[in-house]
Image 1 (cartoon, rainbow, N blue to C red):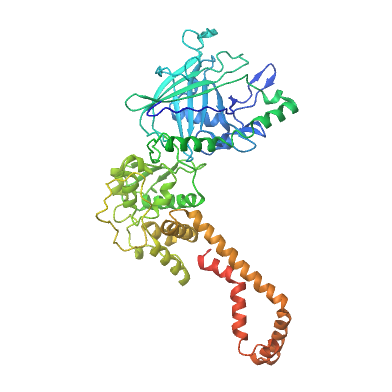
Image 2 (image 1 turned 135 degrees about the vertical axis):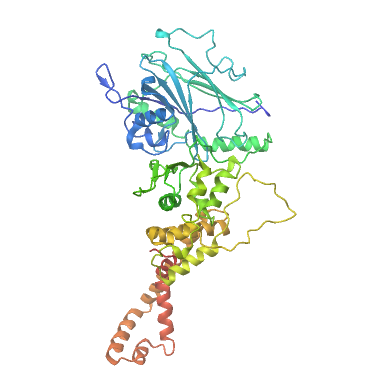
Length: 573
């Protein structure tokens, strides 16, 4: 609606699943439990690991919902069960922009809703609504006549309400054409105003308002037909359903791209760069490299708290699925009684680990990724940053000189690999939102020497030698990507794969040439003469290549073992 008018509509497949405790029955039949890991048929199902907080899918939907509500200060006595409306996995694939959780109490009263929003960057935000704020979105052609009005609202037993309304502030980046400011207004129909309602109807309308309370966008998801039950379709009905709907989930993302292209080219809307998520949101999924770097960073924090003069208790939230919140505490020393310093460190996005390794000093990394940066660039959050000087004091900081740390066992080749890492070290990618205005009249370059970082020194020591080889390869790959591949480590991996395939091809061609020229037999005869006469001339006579035998063998060996030598140079120890 604002600043340009634009509209579209398309069909979309949504499924509903009751999230109920185990053992719930009706008329002697037991319902699928919300404690299950999967709900629905094998070809049309929802997985617990895909919803709410990442990971812990084995504990089931009900446990994850209960844990989330408790974290939001909702007592177990305030609710009983839920109904999840979502885009399920259709033959294993799903693209799910938003899921709706309808929360009911023991009297079947519609009490709360959870809107679980996913953007195209893999980030997630859950909004818990209690219906305490009445929503009053402006009337639009799309919304008029589409849902029940206040005068049309029917009466239901036990005082059940048929509508749920609420408003809340926006703090999550969804569309590049909308900033993170503004507010939402929701008007949702209760799909089960009565427990015995056999035809649930979905009708949710969300209005986005600007920070000046100007209605900007109206999005509505509503049922267009009677709800279907997969268990009652039969074989022919299931085949007809699959043929009608299998393609819908696959075209969701292309539809988003198509509309975005139209908004950018035809409507000329301003584009907002993606900011990093705020504290209540969930960052994207980590890469395998970031998962490894998280383990190194956690052990490094443990080293810090055990070396500082003040006892610390760090609550570390890593943003890694299936990794619970870690409590890192100082080992108790008899006779030292001091108040414990409590500090919470929350990684907002796994990108923090990929950026951390670019900084030579931990204090600089925290300054630039958490404290002295725009909120939209923040990848780390700390509750009491004023305690950092105590944790990073001179005796315990990673600024400790390398000679003061017990060195790990390293070969000369290992030292060359570490030296390459140090030479490649560079600054992380520029944040999306610049802290200071950019000027074309002068350039700012970091002229400091490239030392081993404090995290490097920790890994190089005997305290973390188990991570040394993997850490070095990961960090070197990220530095190469930042310097030569625009930050895309996948390009470095592709070049590495192409090089290894090429080396294997050369080795195969060399072995093929041996087979074509009967070199194998000549080498066997050469070995026999060399053993018998212990003179190279006898072997040369067998090969018939005077003056070039040694060089020919050397080239052959280099071709055959080049791939192995390449792996040795990268270091897999």
